Image (cartoon, rainbow, N blue to C red; front, side, top):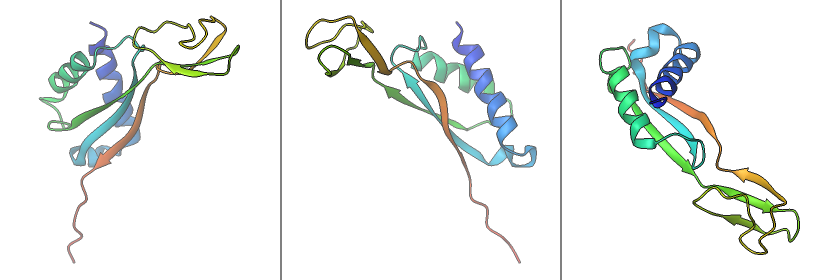
Length: 119
C-alpha cells in the first residue's frame, strides 16, 4: 500500500510550505491525481486521514481532482481519452502518440483558514 507513503509525502510538503505556527490553520490540500498514476484515490484519502488524525493537521481535508488519461496522436492529430491507459489512438489506432494527461500526482494548492485580526 504505497498510498500511505504518498500521504506521508503530502504531509511533508505541507510542512515545508506552511510555517509551523500555521499548521493548525490548514483546512484542505487539493491534489491532482492522474488516472494512470497508480494511486487508488480512496486508499490515499484513508491513509491521509489516518496520518493526520493525531497531528496538527487533524481535520484537514484531502481533495482529489482526478485527471483523465489523454493522448495526442502524431499520425492523425486527434486527442482522445481512455480509461484503460492504452497509448493507442482512439480514432485511427496508431501507437505513435504523446501522453497529454493522466500520469499526474501533484499538490495543486493548500488552503488555510482565514484568521480575524483583533486590534
